[in-house]
Structure formats: structure tokens, C-alpha cells
Length: 399
Image (cartoon, rainbow, N blue to C red):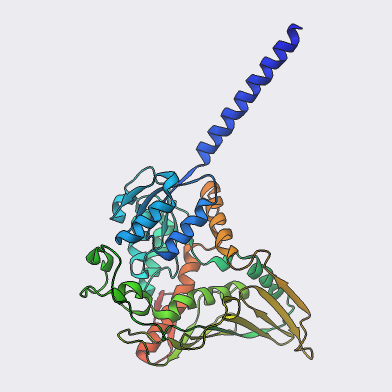
């Protein structure tokens, strides 16, 4: 019976070796994530990262104490380190990748600093505030070895990827115009009047023009030109990136925008804007945003309509429908996302993590993030100057 004992010993040894190899692989594959900006969006995306068992939340940074404490609590099983200055987090050598989910006015400098620190980066959109910043970021990323994913999740979304195949197959014929809209309401709420805890206001303002502490600027920063491009930039970056994806478009040739006056007291960006972008691929991208409309269910609040000379395709958050000529009431083709729009962020984060491990190019690299940001930046300049803005591709500047 000696051979049975020997066989059992060999099996135990094989099991121990296999278990040890699995543990070593898990340790090797583990990604320590640092979170810079743990507000609502940042904390939500952090929880998406946490769904991957190989991700550990190694550090969290925020200058608003309630946000920091909340995120630390949510990530408590990983025992993340707390930072109140993002440069200290970037100096943490145990952190491999960072999630940047701060207000827009900080993205440019934080991405540059994260690249210099050798971190892989997932940065929320819009990528930056100005065309000059975008050019600088594209060049800096090329000089680095970092993986950068911009948080434009439609790039990883199964619904949009399926719809893109329909366009590429020629089903719609020649598409000379894409019409998009997004409806919501931001004018009926009151201004924020107080904060819930300590805020390092000077550090939060950072590179922006300085003002006295204003809770509404902090809470509704997207609506102030000091910190962002207004709601047209915030949501338009998503919409125009979707148009670029569906149409396989390059950088715009020209952009013209018109808008109403702001109806929210104190802010300086309008909530109702129409943008028309011209593309070298011989089509127009028309985007209308109206945040003075009634509120819709999220599945109905936005739509893209691709007007081909053979058929029209409607792409919403959750489904697409193709209507052929003469049959405008009944779709000839339709499709839905397998998991819904909320799952797009899961797919986008998973793509980023795969690229961190494999060093492949992610679905929303920095140059595409700049392409989407550029359109809405040109729209903002057009609103201010009252004229059409053109993109000089050779000189890489707006004229």
C-alpha cells in the first residue's frame, strides 16, 4: 500500500503548489487604485472598480472631509490610506493606477502630474477645459508609458458598438446629419446654502480664479465657467463622443453654437444650447441640450438620430431602432443592451483594467477624449464670441 501513500503525498504536494501558484498570480495581478476626488461620481466609479477581486483601493484623496470619510467607509475592507493633497497620493509608490474624478478645472494638471508619477489613469470626462490643455495632454501621454482611459463609457457599451456595425455596413446609406438631444431640468432647484463639513476651499479652487467660499460654486461647479464648460460641455462630451464612435469621425472642421441666457441665479453658463459641428467625413453633428425642460425617465432623456438616405437609426440609452424609407412607424431592425446603460461603466472599467494588465490601448484613449472635449470647447468659445470657430488641424489650434 506504500504507493497509495506516496500518491496521496504527491497529490497534496500538487495541491499546495497549485494553491501557491494561484496565490502568487493573484498577488501579481492585484492592482492598487488611488482615488482622487471622492464625490458622487468618483465614489460610484470606485465601487465599480471594487467589483474586480484583483483591485484594492489603496488610497483616497479629497479636500472635502464628508466625501473623504464616506469613501473611506465604503472601501474600509481594503484599509485605504487617506490623503488631503493629491500630490501626496501620487507619491505613494504602492499605488499603481489612479481614478481622477475631480471637477473639470483640475483634470489637466492632475493628469500631467499622474503621468509624471508613472501611474495608469482613469479620468472622468471632459478631459480638460481648453484646446491648449488637450494638445498638451495628448503630447504628454505619447511621451509616457502610462495607460489612460477617459471616462466616456459609450466607447465600451455593447449597444453603441452594435449600432456602429450597422452604420459601417451601409444599412443607413449616406448619413449627412446626426441629430442628438438631451432633456432635463436644473432651473427649478434652489441654490446650495451650506456645507456638511470642513472643506479646503483654497485647494479646491486650485488653478481657477479665486472667489470667497460659495457653497453653490462647490455643489454646482459644472455650471460655472471658472471650473467647467457648462452643462453643454458636461453632457455634450458624452454625446459627441457617441457621434464620433457611431460615425467613425475625426476631429471637427468647424463648430457653431447658440444658446439662451442662464436662468439659474449666479451662474454664467446657459442651460439651453444648440451646437452644430462640421466634420471632414461630410456630415453635420447637431446637438441640442435643454436643461429647462421637464424631467424625463433616464431611459428617455436623450436620443441620437442618424439620418441616412436609405434609413434612419435612433439610438437611445437602452436601445436602437432602424426605420427604412416608407416604413417610418415600424423598425426593420432593433436591439437592446444586454444589461442596460448602467452597465456601460462596468464594461469601461473592465476594459481599463484589462489594458493595465496587458498594456493594450483602451477603448477611450486620451486623443479620443480630447476629440470629444474639443467640440464642446469650441462650442463654448462660439457662444462667447458669437461666431463659428474653426479647428486648424495642422497647427492644432482654434481659429
